[in-house]
Image (cartoon, rainbow, N blue to C red; front, side, top):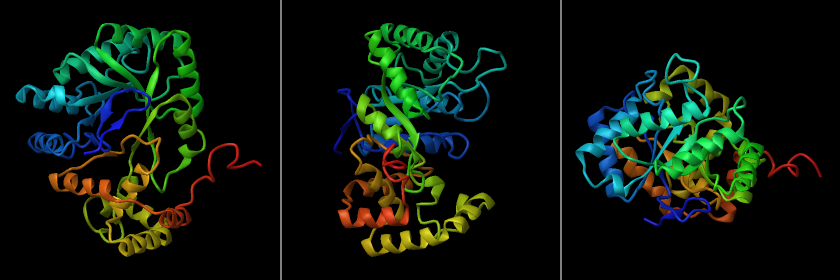
Length: 323
């Protein structure tokens, strides 16, 4: 496994991040523990979760599953770079969500309790909070770092100007600020190329793409149209909407001799701003298969063909839409 630095930090993480959103709702606790065992054994040391995962308000189901895995496997916590998130609604009270200092501190304490650990390696703001001033957010995050409860701070679903604003104000406080941004990014969804990726590059954030396979659309959707989630009405509509591009894409992948999912991950990994796409395996077989992407090198000719099939916004702003 060739590890990568997370943004401008000295932290070394695997080039694939184990996403745990399926743990609980889609994958049993036993199988979730098996997948984490396998991932760590394969060298995947970067695990991502969130307090809201499990989708039972206030329970943190997925964090609890991970916490029990740490409890049953002494020593493995120190081998994992653990990321979780704060922002979502965790109760019925007016302060049980968003990014007030009140909620950040309580949410962190609750996540630590569920995860059965004394620190979070990467604490990510799950969404921008337009009601809370950055002075308050950074004061809360600085306190968590000073107490050793959090090592690094990241963001998710931020706009480019949010990243610029956050890190400019953090620098004024002599605080490291954001070191990573988790964004929707894949061959079919490339809007972040306009301003988020340039902001990450300028401020030294590692990009962690979520939904790298576009909800399964880029994972061989035409070949597996009747299987699993791809059989749902919503996915079927997406397949029909993008059928011409999918036909060209899957034909190119066949020509290359690689599975579509592996090509999609390899395409993300060729971007130097990308640290690690988030993979969300529901089975051990899916996890093992994802590692094939690490051995794929895409030529300039192939990259041009992929751009023709899945055109982005035209580059970064403002050149994408102005002279």
